[in-house]
Length: 180
Image (cartoon, rainbow, N blue to C red):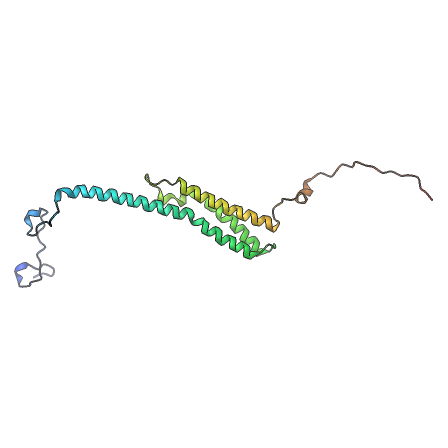
């Protein structure tokens, strides 16, 4: 007897003959369970398929919202790091500030790629994309604010003095009479 080909009458009680390859339920000795009908199986399959598609669409929408809200965590972390860097101009504070500007900028350039896995006809990605963009713009505003507190933004008139033309002289003084 070959390995894996046990036959029912071979003396082993646990052996099962799997050689019956027919698909017809009448050829089997095992009846269908109560309440089971083979005619409704195709209908159930279409219902299950629709439920799976709805569940997948819900999952994609949920994940899209998670991705959209992810910059908020980065915003809090970057704000804390900028606070820890202080208000003096040194290498660490400048590096943190430019990182706070670069990360949202690169995230805004790749909005389409970020939400690509969640594209579906049943999933509306407009609101998550707008939230993602708004949070990244908020992070950029935080970086610009930090640049201003460090004094690296030209916001005062004295920052632009070199580009102004010399003032026109309004009064002239000339020689006078010398009093002794």
